[in-house]
View 1 (cartoon, one colour):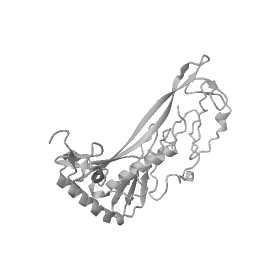
View 2 (tube, helix red, strand yellow):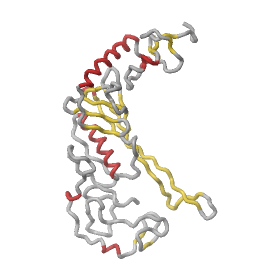
View 3 (cartoon, one colour):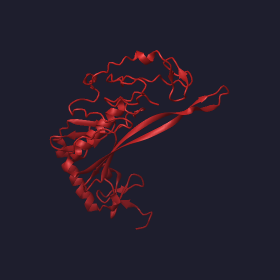
View 4 (cartoon, helix red, strand yellow):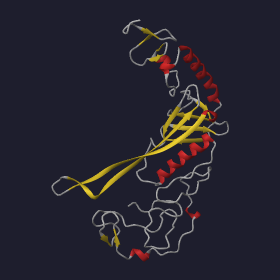
Length: 295
């Protein structure tokens, strides 16, 4: 068969177009037959026509399993992970109706591991001088965004791994703010449930780990009454001047007169904790790990 000879689908016999075809080790699939395959199927060039027939048989049986699938946990953004803890099954799909698209139902027993990563992206901020030229701040300022990624590795005939971006709907712009904590909790929950291991403690850079949230408590239902407030009177430092940690300027107001940085705080806005020594400026709360000062 020549390079430019007409090619035909190895399943239905229809002519295969240049676009949308799937190449097998011993044949081709047309666009319509390819659409019946799992979206997570990889390495089709190594599969034979018989392998594809087995896969399509699996896809038919998957519909019966999917009909009995009853998830009690949903994690992620646009692409969600639906988990049926009772039957130890999970589904990954970006479709609003995962049953309609016959999303793959995967048993926990096929999970080899879950790897969670957080990628930080930063972009420098600039200002325009009196002549309209773009200038860097001194010291430089940056805006940040954090991408939460989870990769599920599998021992399956049809899938080697499934990658999910938990933050594909919205990315946090600050370490350990509410959204960052929620996504961090989702990632640790996903790993714990699918692998059957205890939920990991979060690693807070520069501060202590905070307690695990109960599995039946939404992360946004954080109860600040769990912590005892220190009786230190914050007025002790409110009436004094302060030195900006970013540019070094001495100020008396709530914002730096040189770079605009906010006045540092010694009381955690989340749980009310304050240090015993107000001269010791904390970046993270010693009770709950909340970021108090970003400097």
